[in-house]
Image (cartoon, rainbow, N blue to C red; front, side, top):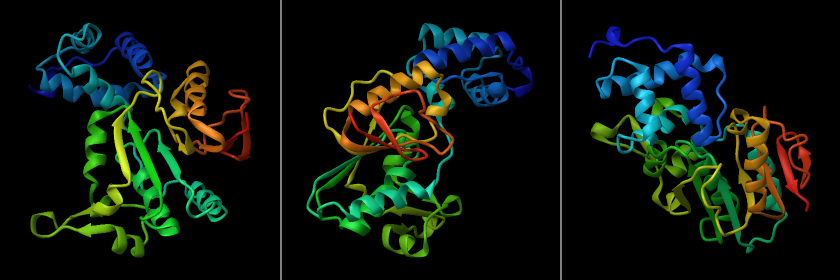
Length: 272
């Protein structure tokens, strides 16, 4: 289908899509996201041979096409990330690990893991500080099933990699050969320490285990205050007392939840 046969996304229909993604994922999209939504959803109109965003909205609203609603969520919730993004959090984690007993069991949760760079960064740090033989594990979750599938594979284009040192590349990444020469893959022994699973921060059943560290970064900024409070409450309920919650540098929890103490900007400790 020629792209010029697709009607532009009207302001009224954009608002309807914004209401749906807030309903499904708690994410608030203001009018500044109009072009992003139009561009990302256009490919689905082409795939379904639709010429109108209204028709696509009706499909999502009615859930009449199997798996299309998840496609919609995937397209509007996938964000850029890279290895050891916001390095301050990793330095803080390393400093905390240094004062913990080496044999202490540790559980970490990467609560919006995207394409896997964050949980694999955590596993690299833990492997360096604690070794792979120590009792630690990482849960990695995301609302997007497509991005989780990529994360589970742990395969990345070399030219897209950011944040890894040469030593980390040599130690934790396997170089592709022949047709895969432009790619690298996370070492299998590192992947074994990470469990990936689909999770909606707003409504999925919470993990039964308690965590020492929860990373939920660069996601809360998309929630309004009410939804942010709901998500943070759920996350904090999964933290051990004394455990730490990391948020993005631009995300503040001031006035959101009084069970948390500010340790440093974007680093919070559960005190109640």
